Image 1 (cartoon, rainbow, N blue to C red):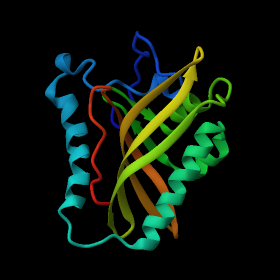
Image 2 (image 1 turned 90 degrees about the vertical axis):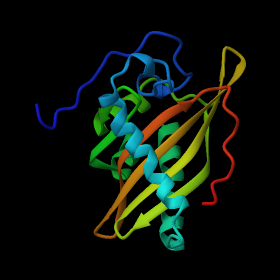
Image 3 (image 1 turned 180 degrees about the horizontal axis):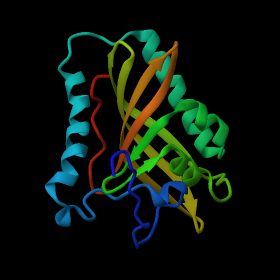
Length: 193
């Protein structure tokens, strides 16, 4: 069925201590059994930020500033379970893409706003690289999520790549790819962006 979004049940195992547990897929968890055709779109999308590394043109500082502020607003809306603000930031066609599943805007919002607000939860965005071409921007970064679970601190890191479109002077997120970085991976070195 063209244009349909397939959904899957949450995977078994210990979920992260925050609302994305139905959407974040641990990198490599099921990669061995996945068909190449399912990994290819993710691999191609992940390569886009590498183009920015080889680019000699610096991104427009005003667009970088606008997108950085929008990202902080997005984080705040997630932490506060503010569905209305998320709907302003996310395009109606928004897709959240994990390693093995895709979610619509409304499914994503429902997932991140379900349950009580966790006052110990924080997100820190680092290692940003921007690729901006006219009314399209691709941003890749590391999202470090910290929380307290059963009195013990937890930390998870995710590689996030978000595509933004500017329509009528307003930037909105069109798609986001998020994959967990294995705990044994060293912190990313600054990519120069």
